[in-house]
Image 1 (spheres, rainbow, N blue to C red):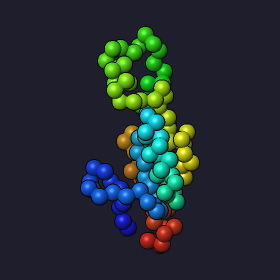
Image 2: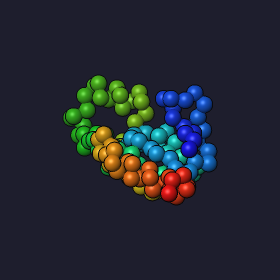
Image 3: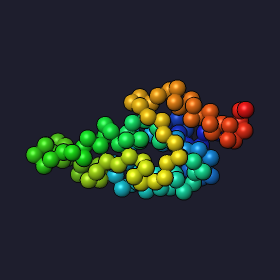
Image 4: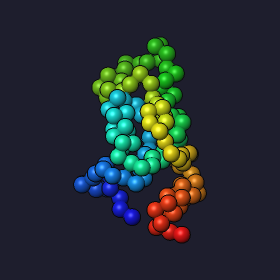
Length: 125
């Protein structure tokens, strides 16, 4: 098994020819949507990890903000971090093959999904 892209742990990362991509988090900007499409284009399988990736929530609570709820501080974040109007779950942007829900993610479900892919690639029987 080889880990190709873990931004927080590796200095050299690659999103090319991935067998399985595990993606965490909701999509809150056009840049993130483009990155996600690149992951999908370079992966045989994509697994959404955690509630934000699977349902958009709690991140997507921003989608229900009314104009009177947007304080000066919130508006500053929206303007300076290029956030999209709406936060999206992964399957609103790309095809997702599996999901591991929960916040934090369900460890037993993650082990089940991971085992599925380890078997697909004959890494375990």
